[in-house]
Image 1 (cartoon, rainbow, N blue to C red):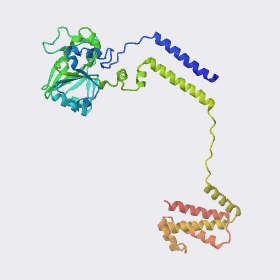
Image 2 (cartoon, rainbow, N blue to C red; image 1 turned 120 degrees about the vertical axis):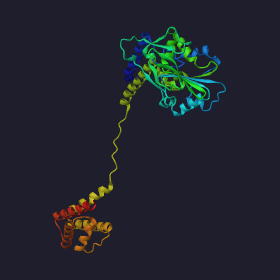
Image 3 (tube, rainbow, N blue to C red; image 1 turned 30 degrees about the vertical axis):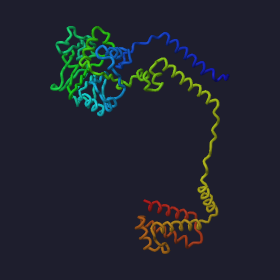
Image 4 (cartoon, rainbow, N blue to C red; image 1 turned 90 degrees about the vertical axis):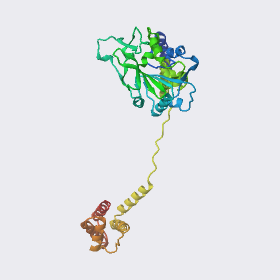
Length: 406
């Protein structure tokens, strides 16, 4: 075995041993994160609540829905009265879902919605608004000082239901008094349970979803509050329990197969650590192996520009021959061809009229064009010219190109 593999192998083995030791010694803490799912037995899940629906309604008429409101109601035909139950920290369906829900209720059905926050479209449609009460701003009040009770005398409990403020902090701060009936209030007299009539049906709205969870099914006599709140749904109704709007709960998604295997891995702390150790070990191993085995990458030179090489060679040849007049005449011919093709002018006679016309078309000063024409005549009259004369001609011509291109 190659010695270079010993280091990453030893590192991986040590990490796995440490992980196993920590896992054996560690007790899983109680998960207080809210899920409101019927599949969760954590304090703020709803498994116990869902299992006891059969005590209030016909157990054969209790179903679970993993569809959106729109998907559930758009193609469904309800031959018997139906109730749609949503318990979640937030209920924010889009406009299409909300319209389908309202149509469903107006046909004579019931929507039981428990959430601290509702979508704006739903609140506007039902003319309600909610607010969160943070301990009423009083630090001297105990955590379980908020109470809930029903308004109707026949349902009002002699012993109020005492809740933690964090479990009973939502309330309805406005609602339509003509269409709405207050069913329950908190210790400050603020509504927490409303019945809003809509068409032939009704919305039953609860602003305290945490009060309808596993914890309060088992805490003191709070199960009475939950069962009484749900009993506002007529007993003969078929129940559709929503699970769609809780899709962000990783445990539920893994159990129902709605996400990939990685979601389940990251929902378990021990599997998460094992996965990370595997990835880091793999990176560590690949880094060592690639560093040892990778071949040198040869440097490929770019192909030369033969046109530029040829031009450079010809230029050097003319310069070394010291035939400055030949070079000057070629530059003059190129310039005159440029003038003919761009400004459509004859270049046989470089007269003052030619100078004025070219200056007007090219927007090059007349004096500069006169200097060029004078230099052209000077080159034509002499049998040979000096290097300085060639440089002066070249400078004048290049300046003309620059000014005429503006």
